[in-house]
Length: 190
Image 1 (tube, helix red, strand yellow):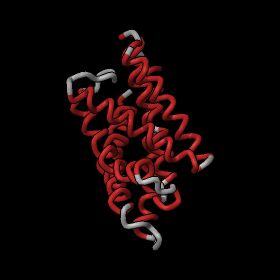
Image 2 (tube, rainbow, N blue to C red):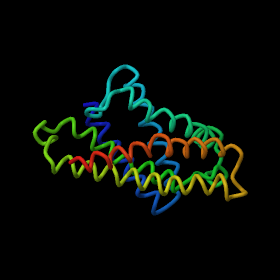
Image 3 (cartoon, rainbow, N blue to C red):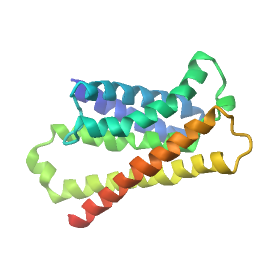
Image 4 (cartoon, rainbow, N blue to C red):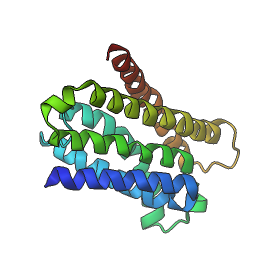
């Protein structure tokens, strides 16, 4: 049941990410859902339970903990301090890009229901690796652009947001980029 709920919620998070590309007002709900999912998944992984097929809990924690820490101040300001999204300046492109990667996470969860024969088929391995590469590339490109622009080119970035943007940019550089190159490497072997 846990896996079904997580697959569904990761799918919804992906839809929220697509909605954020269309309308930046979706950025705070998308960010809230993504943060909530990562917290739940991290708590389960800390207890040795993972919903994603073939991914050890330790790797899920390494992937989820940096965004959890970076996003917490933004959500605190928005939901607890009632600061409007315009004051916080949520990085909507980065939020959209990162939320859209939830589609890939949904596939990882759903793959735990697939037969081993299907998982080992070239069709599945290729299509899943291409999906992984695409979502990681758009996350790195759009999210990286949004964070880099806010840190180095905008003069109106609030001081509160500097660590958030820095953390998101670091997460993209040191977590998502190696995952992207690993996916490309897998694609060449198939």
